[in-house]
Length: 239
Image (cartoon, rainbow, N blue to C red; front, side, top):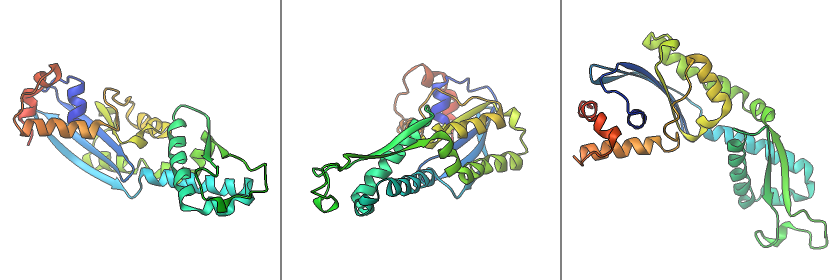
């Protein structure tokens, strides 16, 4: 991931720098400190917390299901169906992304006979809702995941302490993973480092892009493009 960011920034390979890489994906949370000096790099410390992006989604899902059962009590059997719950989980994941830019979002699932088994419906009820929904505010989202947000910065504090690095001396902040789009995560990181996250690469794509760059180098393919050419000397020092 760091390689992809450095190439995208057209970074000067001779420039010494200290980088904080914060990764929060569906499966893990990790923070690492990377120091670049004299055309080489060292990964000083890596630390992880036993939380992940999936847990944020699950908390939203549990809340949404509970509220829908309260709002639509006659839909209990339907809401307990695994197909319905799969749709609800997807809607919750989408809601988390929408809340990066909005103050509230509707979490909804379509409830119609064409998409679901008829056993979950009352054929005599002409007022059957076609869409089940509840509204989740940004404050609700923060409160639901308060404990996770509190723990989310633990790896950052740990790697900074172990590396004996002042957080204000961080030169670059690199983000990895879709869950780093959450506003509160970014606000906490900016508050610690006083650095804005590097915007040059999508955090969802950066790990794959970095792997492609390494694969190209290992295969001795011709590195093309200004960013590659400017950093070829640094790249040749990678171990």
